[in-house]
Image 1: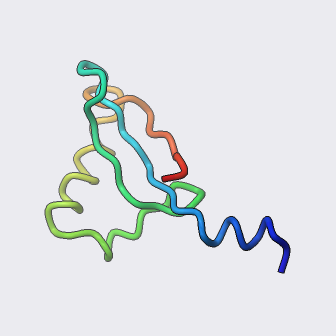
Image 2: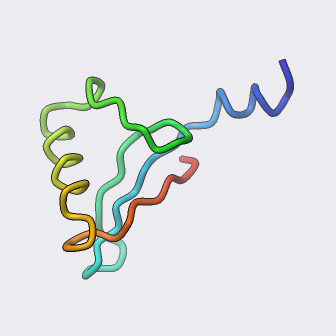
Length: 69
């Protein structure tokens, strides 16, 4: 196993949906390096918030960006 592969396995990622209107506000959810969120691992409130943020891109939230957490 290469050191790069080990590093990727240990790195955690989150997808962030920044607010279009309030700097520093928005939502962040755990995801893989490709931005895929495992909705089964989210709480009920987390699922509702994720679906809301995803639906409101361009209206309330900017295009989401994946970051190493």
